[in-house]
Length: 445
Image 1 (cartoon, rainbow, N blue to C red):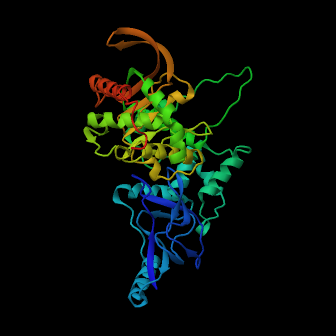
Image 2: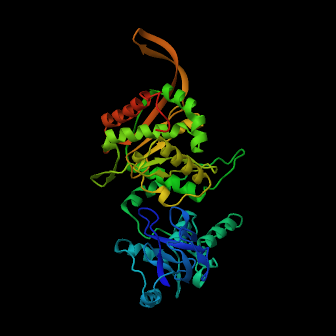
């Protein structure tokens, strides 16, 4: 029998650690490869972690509430193999589990230390970065945090503990001194600059009927990111109107066969994304991000697609390597991400790595919009509603009037690195690809 270490997986770029929420399997349980073994929380999303091997769960090295760096062991799985060759590995694993403590990455060591340990008189209590993040966003003071009874290891406060407290707190708020509110452990120059704006509170009417709704955590995160994007990037928007009549006729002709053969609906979105991918290949300087005074040109084309959730919030899953997918692959990926987004089944990796974003505002009946860039990307395209309009049609016999299916494209871009000429040419090229769509194209080629 061989022993295999299961480690904390990397769940997206910039995510260096995860918090154990709960184990779905117990020691001694038989597990299959890729079967979900535990739930892990990051700052971006909660997700289930699958097993990396088939066998018996022999030992759990991390308990509920523990914060584990990416790549560190969290469990040991016993698999079929050479028993003699694994006796040393077993002893090594046990030694590591009992004596070795993971060293934090130097660049974030001070921040982790500030987030993880809070002094309360002579006592010292552990708080995970996830719990601290929720506490700051919900304005939970240090006195309140200290009063929460933890259900994790060594009575640590888990994510569920603080969320339950916040839910009950709304009906019976605890009054504590403002000076005890939890502060950010590290205040950057950007935070200092934006502090005066954050302190400005909108005026409230004291007459008439109104309802005050507190933002949920996701809405607060969206608000912070949108404000930060407008602060960081000077936004410019260029508009183009495209004739998509050929696309409408082609889709109407093939959508029934597409559903029967591929068992998924063919919408306009993957067709539009295909045109965006082609334009990004033609203008690679749009597929960039900014790092200080450096421009990072992305070789991968990963398209983020904005999805409206039933709660009214917005989430942006990413189609990785969209340039390597045909129309069938794009359609299945678009439908899969949209379905899992609305069912709250996305993973952290589904939300990371985007290089350019598309937002289909036409699905809400909007003709156009001025979307806000998803940082650190440099551009975002809003797709308007497809509307029948009278238009001039050029023919060999001369110009004539006809009813055409028209759509506005709205391209917002970061003027630090994309000037009006490049931003305008890019969106014009997307429109050209849409207008030149081959109506005789085979859907299953």
